[in-house]
Structure formats: C-alpha cells, structure tokens
Amino acid sequence: MHVDPLETLRGRRSAKWRTYPDDVLPLFVAEMDYPLAPPVAAALHAAVDASDTGYSLAQPDLGVALAGFAGRHWGWDFDPGAVTAVADVGVGVVELLRLLTRPADTVVISPPVYPPFFDWAPEAGTRLLEVPLTGEFRLDLPALEAAFAAHPAVYVLCNPHNPVGRVHTREELTALVRLARLYGVTVVSDEIHAPLVLPGAEFTPLLSIPGAGEVAVSLLSASKAFNLAGLKCAAIVTGGPALAALVGRLPPDVRWRTGHLGVLATVAAFKEGDAWLAELHAELDERRAQLGRLLSTRLPGVRWRAPEATYLAWLDCRALGRDDEPQELFLAKGRVAVEPGTRFGAAGAGYVRLNFATSSGILDEATARMAGATG
Ligand SMILES: Cc1ncc(COP(=O)(O)O)c(C=O)c1O
Image (cartoon, rainbow, N blue to C red):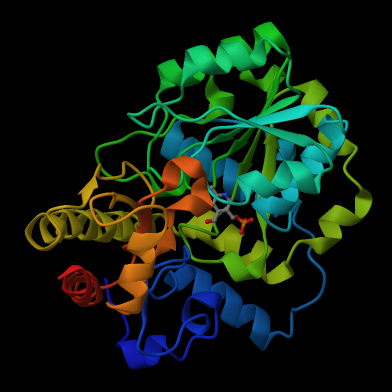
C-alpha cells in the first residue's frame, strides 16, 4: 500500500504528527499512515463540494451500511434499526454506563487494556474493578466468575483486545455470556477493532452468541480500520428489547453530537470499502511479519506475541528496563515514540505498544533506531 514520504506525513495536523518534534518517528497513537480508502475520500470530497456540512442524521443509512458489513464479513445478521449513532466509542460507553450504573456499583475491566477503559467508569460516576487477563492474554474466566459473583453492574469487554491483539474465541465469549446471564451482569462490548482482524484469525461478534442480546450491547466503528477517528462517528448495536429500551433512554442530545462527515465516511466505508480493506489486511499482515523479523534480528531481548488483530504490537521489553524505562529509552535515545506500557495498567510495566500501520521503510528505520538506543 502506498505511504506518503515522511515530509508529507508530517504535514498532517492530527495528534500523531503534532505531539512530538519532527526528529521523532511517531508510532504511538492508533492512527494509520495509509491514504484514505478511495470510496471514503470520494464521499468526503462530495460532501465538501456540496457544502454538505450540517448536523448528522445517521439513520437509516448507518444501520443499513453496518448491518450489511457485519453480514458479509462475520455472518452476523441484525436489524439495521438496532443501530444508534454516537460521536465515538468512548462517548457511547460512558453514556451507557451512566444508564447502567449507580455510584456504589462496580464496572469490571481486564487489563492490560486501552487506557480510557480506566477512565470511563469514573467519568460515569461509578467504580472500577480490575480482573486482569491471564499470562497468555486470555480472558481469566474463573477470576471473572469470582468477580461476577459479587454482582458488578457491567463488564466492559475489549474484542479484539487492545493492546495485546487477542481475538477472543467463540468458546470464551460463550462462557462469558453464560456468566453474565448467571450473575446478572451487563456486558458492554467494545468491538472497534473488529474490522482489523488479520489473516489467521476469525472475529466472533459478541451479539452473535445465542442469548447474548439479553445481556450485552456492542459498539462498533469504522474509525480504526478506515482511519476516521477525527470525524466522530460510532455505532451502538443491541440484540434484544431490554437493552434496546435502555439505549432508547440515552439523552436525546447524544445523537446531535455525532459528526456528519463521520457518518458519511462510515457509510461509504462499510458499504463500499471491502476491496480496500482487503488490501489493508494484506499490508498489515506483511508489516506484522516484517516487524517479527526485525525484532528477532535487531532487538532479540524484546519478546512479543504477534497480534491476531489490530496494527498494534505489545512488546515485552522487560529485559531493557522497568516500568516505563523502555519507552523513555526509545524516545530519548532512539527518537521513536511508542506508548508506555503502564498506561494500559500495572501489568504493562516494562512493555511498550508500537503502531505498525506504516510503511516498511519507516518500520525499518524505527526498529533500527530502537536497537541503536539499547546499545
Ligand atoms: C479498544 C478501543 N476502544 C475505543 C477506542 C477509541 O475509539 P473512539 O475514538 O471511537 O472513542 C480505541 C482507539 O484506539 C480503542 O483502541
């Protein structure tokens, strides 16, 4: 896939390109360096040409586009009317938690996990309980059962799981749904990385598990796979009447906060983006393999498990230092910015998260600099 030269990429004004000085290679935040999918770019150009930049009215187009995508890619068929637009996944989760919890309740998460998972429950005015993944980065089902037995209000699932790149299996999700039903816990499933499941793995939508619709609500978005984070559009999907009624109680203003350009781009991505997405998967598969080769030759002390999904690599750098020392070393001496592991929870000490959605040249240069920093 084409990637613009660094000088051109540095002209972008998003967080990835504005956070660090120009001598730093930014492989931290989850943005991609590839050009937009042509149907998405065309939809945005057409909107601008028509001065079509008012408020969004997402439905029915968003629901139809997302249901079509889910049916084609995952065999998951649902009513397009079960979709509700929100500004982004974070807004959707927080608004759902406000409805699902009271201050004395707890919300369970499984670190290491995407940093805002630690912030969403407090933002919604409730408490957090951590039930870490196992050493193999799998859901710790016995520990979750022990936690669920104390009747927390909500479990926030990350599937696929950022930062470890694990795609939870149908068996694991079936077991999770059983526990949620048994103990009366609602599962909020963040499936933002679902369109980024790479060759070799298969995505199971939580709501495709029998009985899940009674206890679970999912959030999906085109923003990771199509690089649309700044356009502000995500979707809540329900699979049963009780949770549909709950979503119906979201504050009416929430839908007005969704980005109109985000809706237009998302509809184009989900309707017409399949060919481009297949190219992206092939590209990320190659970058993932390249990173594996570069790590083993240049940074043999760094260990990893190649992710099954996402373009994020969770690198065990404990041989290089404690806490966030490896990230500090790579930045200070290598001029490469990666995410410090402790942002993902205490279990992230000594880890970094590296974004490999870039060109082979930049990945080559970044790993050479990282290796140089350790010398
Ligand atoms: C697991 C996960 N959820 C949510 C988000 C953020 O989504 P949004 O920008 O739609 O809030 C990200 C961003 O990388 C993510 O990795």
